[in-house]
Amino acid sequence: MNSEVKSAARILDLVEFLAGCTEPVALKQITAELGFPKSSAHALAQTLVSRGYAIQDSTDRYILVHGTSHGSMIRAREARLLSAAHPVMEALRDRSGETVVLSVRTVRGEVKRLAKCVSRQVVRYDTDLDGGPVAAYCTAAGRVLLAHWEPAAVEAYLSRTQLAAYTPLTVTDPARLRDILMRTREQGVAVNDQEYVSGASGIAAPVRDRDGIVVAALNLGTLTTRFQLNRDEIITAVKDAAAEVSGRFGFGGRRGIASKATPVASTVDP
Image 1: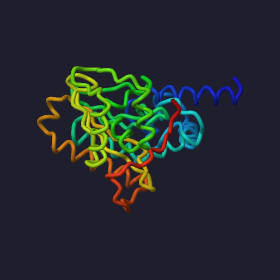
Image 2: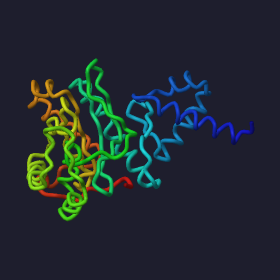
Image 3: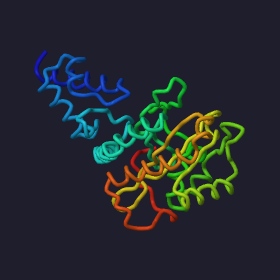
Image 4: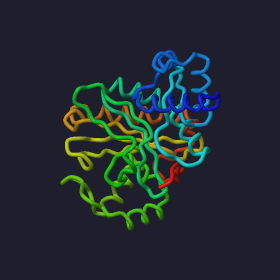
């Protein structure tokens, strides 16, 4: 095997290893699991980071950027977003005991889940990052992203989307959904109470970039019974965490824009 083929095989081994990790991993663990020399493992990991396929967190651990985004600029932007969000997501997961998910909007208005920090509780909410786009109208993250999209784009989304009922509690009336989106903009948070999955609740808040544009939604997923016991504390924790991610991503809170719609920077293809 020549050196080029060997390097290609090693970087594919690293990608496959990281794809199977649900938590960030240190370089020491990579070398132990794959048997690579430390210098080679570091060079390969840094190559993935520089190309936007992985992120390196504040403790020098690595995690793969999930999804199939097209274009290096898009992938690099997602990587920067994940780098800012991941430590906050871990802290929120550990503080609340619940699963935390970061999502963006597709060009068609659906939800793409970028990353998750899964609850360590025995009975917990979880989601598949590779399951394809998710409905926006009946999920907390989706409502945050729709609420801060251009009104014309929202109307186009509602007109072309089959508003199916996932549970008996799913809101499918367009007029009611418009009211929900308006309240989401005003309150800075969306709550989904068993509209997408029976027995599960989602709470999401917007993540903004340096210009105040909503680029993602930070979502906490939990069992409805646990949410009902700690509703106010969970909502406050999610809003605070989203604000912290926004700050790490460059938003300084210069403008009072929480109550008005702003364009969401689309980061993925449909």
